Length: 252
Ligand SMILES: Nc1ncnc2c1ncn2[C@@H]1O[C@H](COP(=O)(O)OP(=O)(O)OP(=O)(O)O)[C@@H](O)[C@H]1O
Image 1 (spheres, rainbow, N blue to C red):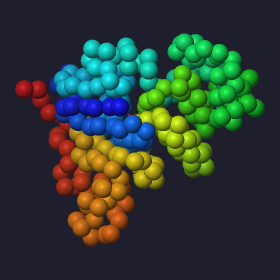
Image 2 (cartoon, rainbow, N blue to C red; image 1 turned 90 degrees about the vertical axis):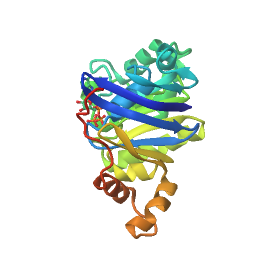
Image 3 (cartoon, protein in one colour; image 1 turned 120 degrees about the vertical axis):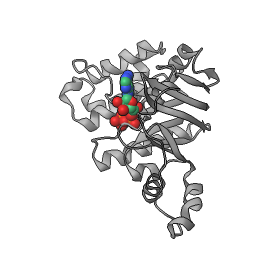
Image 4 (cartoon, rainbow, N blue to C red; image 1 turned 180 degrees about the vertical axis):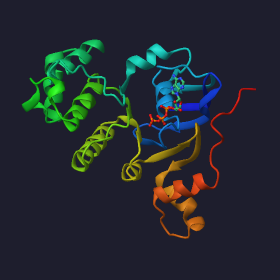
């Protein structure tokens, strides 16, 4: 589904993503974790075909992340941190807008399907600006999958959302993976990290730990002197051991 090999993104002399390699297999939930500024959004935008990398190679859905960015953009779903909804348009109009953008057929039917699936029927005629964060998040989620992408990127989809809504959100993610969707999600929440099949921890542009959640737990059990360490403890341990390099790495 996704294969990245030594991806670097440089903004001037600042290296936001530093030689990242990773593989995401089909049908899994892949969690990208790390503090603010670790490089997660930049990496997601590279995988979505929005940003070209400075160096490195990779393929997403079989397309080259440098030369075939348009093909990638058309085929993936992306929910950015800012949700990218039109506040003056109603819930229904926002979904219809994205359906049109992606060339979805039977827009009316698909919009009704999604407002049902995401419990948005009662608010479908209300402008997005009038709605709370949890509902806006559901609208953005519906809009991101309106064209039924096989691969979905979610950038901090649950930040600022209440715990119950977060739980429902994850149930919906699992339903989508059961239907064959592959999901890459960034999060700050460790309980959400624990729900992923695979995770990568980013620190200062680099991936400092990655793997299947169970394998990581096994790998660090002895060092942390616990049978099944929490991911949060593994990450604190890895970073305190000096994972990652200094951010202001100069070119050449
Ligand atoms: N266009 C840009 N020009 C210069 N620097 C940038 C640009 N985009 C991102 N950066 C810098 O790259 C670093 C990584 O940012 P990025 O948004 O990828 O991190 P993040 O892990 O997603 O953090 P957050 O959770 O806050 O979004 C930050 O220090 C940011 O200021």
